[in-house]
Length: 216
Figure 1 (cartoon, rainbow, N blue to C red):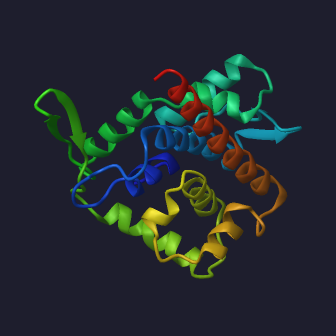
Figure 2 (cartoon, rainbow, N blue to C red; figure 1 turned 90 degrees about the horizontal axis):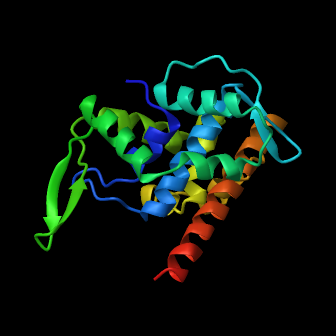
Figure 3 (spheres, rainbow, N blue to C red; figure 1 turned 60 degrees about the vertical axis):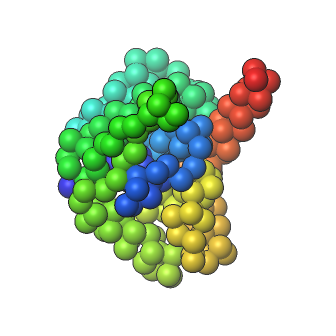
């Protein structure tokens, strides 16, 4: 099964057997928004210049979530900071759509329950572990010293920015994770993408946390 980078993040963000979410909703939703922007960038649909992102090629990639964001950006037609677009893209609704898509593909299943008998909640345990196993093998290979491709490097950068790398790969070499996350190995275009997405995830998650604290 072909999955997006956002779906890869989502799989790694849930425990395999129980399907519990390993990081906060804010961190995860921001990571998913950043992942979509990053995937468009490494597929040569976006370009980064002067810390702003714009559409380079509006041709669809064949994925409804990616194509919807790309079309929205093309229609807007303006060069904007990546954080602006991630804040427009990320939401709990995006997370739910992607989880339901993985469930429809029989990679995950949804188990519904109620907290204190009142508040509905869902867990998403794995049904078919082969998809996540392939992702883990690819990431582990890079963290073990293999030359990273752009897709795997972006995934590692997103995991690191969302504080998910320590939970998903607790035994990983922190120095190697940082090296990949900072794009030190990469060409200019990919390095810019990784740097922008790192910044976006950190800024958006911090802003959301501050907003939540001031409204409680």
